[in-house]
Length: 102
Image 1: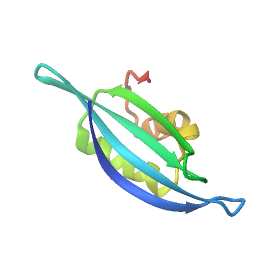
Image 2: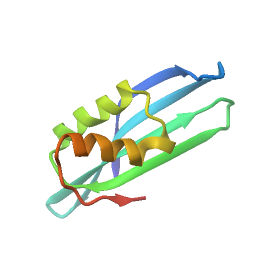
Image 3: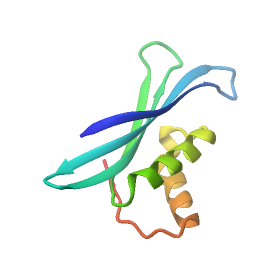
Image 4: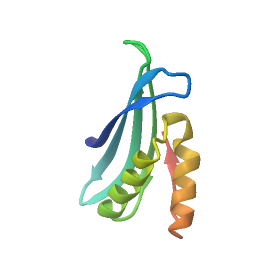
């Protein structure tokens, strides 16, 4: 699997804590077919605090998925909310996808 950084954001939490959110497009190629997914990584607060969530196996155009990832990033979506927010965004877009959560 290869990953491409789509966006990094410095975020200030409701409690005043600072952390970094990183949004990735993940690509998995088997033979001549590729599937795409989303990964969000939260770094901080604190040096060794890392939380991540990945949804893999989305099977549609990667350029459309890049737009969805940008929408998630614009909303400062965290790893804990990825699955729910992704479902909402996809429902809004009226896409029927099979999702494999990693």
